[in-house]
Image (cartoon, rainbow, N blue to C red; front, side, top):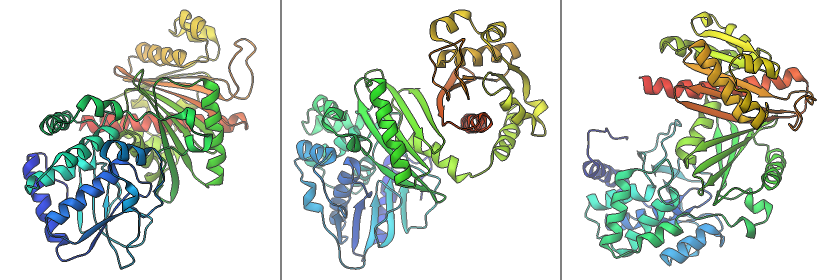
Length: 480
C-alpha cells in the first residue's frame, strides 16, 4: 500500500495507521523481526508492540531464535538498557505474524502484515504492507506513533535514534535521508539525549581482533532466496582496511562455506569508515568479483537489490546483451571497447545482436603494452601501476571512450591461462575491467578459477555484461 509522493509524511503516516487498525482489529498479533535479529528489527518490534498496545490491539513481540550475547544484544543492552532475552520465546497458538524490517520468514504462521524500509521487487499479498525508503523501520513506526498521538518518551526516542544510526552507520550510509536526520536531532534535543555519544556508538565497528574466522564471515549474516537461488550476505564495519593476506583468508573461508551451504553466491561487504568506501566481494563457484565504491553504500538499498535483479532476471548472456543493445538504441547511446585478455570477446558478443551497428562505434584489441599506449593509455599509468591494475583498466576505458566519442567506454586487462614474462607480479586468473559512463567509472576485479582459457574468458564477459546491464538499467531509470 505504497503512498504517493504528493502526500506529506504526517498524512501518509495517519492513513497507514488507520489501515493498520482496520486490518489488525480483533486479531491476536505476533510481531517478529527478521530471522537473524538485528538492532533495527528488534527495536522496531518493541516499538510496534507499544504502538499496538496504545491502539488496543492484542499483540506480543517475540524473538523466535536463540538470543545470543552478540553485538546486537550488547548495543541494545548498553544503550537502551533492554535485555533482548526478555522477548525470547514462542507463541504456541496459531500465529498471525507481523514482520518488521523484513518481507519473509522461515517461521510458521500466517503472515498478515509487514513494515519495512527496504523496497524490493518481490511481491506479497499480505493484508497490510507499508514499505518505503527510510533510515530505519523504527522511524516509520515513529511516524505512525506521532500520527495517532502516542505519548513518546525518552526511552522511545532513544530507541528510534539508535535504530536509525546503527542502520545507517551513524548517517554515513547512502540510505540516509536528510529530513529524517534532522528529526533525529530534534528528538535528541527534546528528550535530553547525548546525540554525539549515540552517533559514535552508532558506527558499530566490528571487533575483528576479538572474533574467530567463522564469527567474522558470519557477522551480520542474512540469507535470501531469489528465484530459488540461495544467496548469503554478511558485512563488517571497520576503521581502516586489514592486510591483503587477512582478507584472502576470509575469502578462502567463504569459498568453503559456499560449498558447505550449497549457496549460489556469498556476498561479503566491508564498510570502511576511515576512507568512506564500500568493498564488496561476490564469491561464486567459478570466480570472485571485487568492487570498491566511494561512500558507505546500503546493503539493503544499493547492494542486494542489484544481486536480486541478477537472479530474478535469469537470462543467458545473449538475452541480456539483446536488452542492453535495445536500451542503448532507445537512449541514443553508443559504446566502445578496448580489450586485452578477452581478445575482442566482448565486442563479438555485442555484434552477435541485431542492431549492434547502431551501438558499437569502435573496438580495439590491445594485447600488448605498446598497443595500449598507441590507443591512448598513458605510458606513465602502466609504469606506475603495471598493466595489470585497476588504474590501467580505467585508463583504457577512458581512452577508448574519448577516441571513439562514445557514451560508454570499457577497458579490460588481466592474465588468463598463463603467467606473462614481460609483466611479472600478477596472479594468473586476475582480471580488471572498467566501464566509463559520463563522469562515472565502475571498476571491478575478478579472480577466475583455474580452467580452460575459453571458459575463463566467458566468465569474464559474463560478469562484464552483468555490470554493464546494471549501469544501463540505472541510466534508463534516470532517463525515464
